[in-house]
Length: 152
Image 1 (cartoon, rainbow, N blue to C red):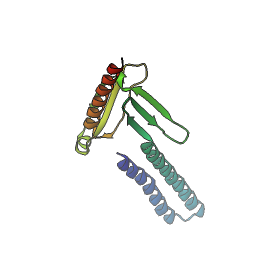
Image 2 (image 1 turned 90 degrees about the vertical axis):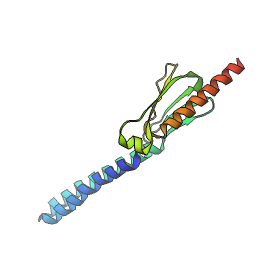
Image 3 (image 1 turned 60 degrees about the vertical axis):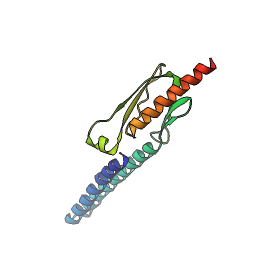
Image 4 (image 1 turned 120 degrees about the vertical axis):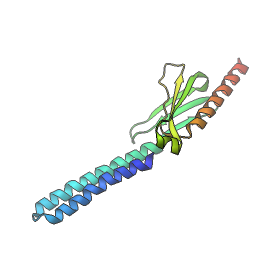
């Protein structure tokens, strides 16, 4: 889902820039030309920055399943990090949601993981092959519960 959004950001940045360049060629005043081009360049840079942070967030949103824990790490920008962790034994319920033709055809969707603890639920969005991830998480949770039963 990243690349369609990046394409939209590129379109939102390029079209006004090209329109401003075209308008600047039609205006006789140098000040109006410079003002139009200046605003268009600032807009294009803002869209490029928006696309960069969209890319950054996508590549720094990590969801890990180990043999004992579920870890969710999210970095929205350089100065933000959110890290959440839960024992696999404490996972009570896992559900999957996939809606729409696009999600069905491209095989991606959302998961919701409810834990027994007071912390918030894990909700990874737009993950690839959500039924496979749900099955793997269920199997790992059951294995972790068996390990806890053996050590008690």
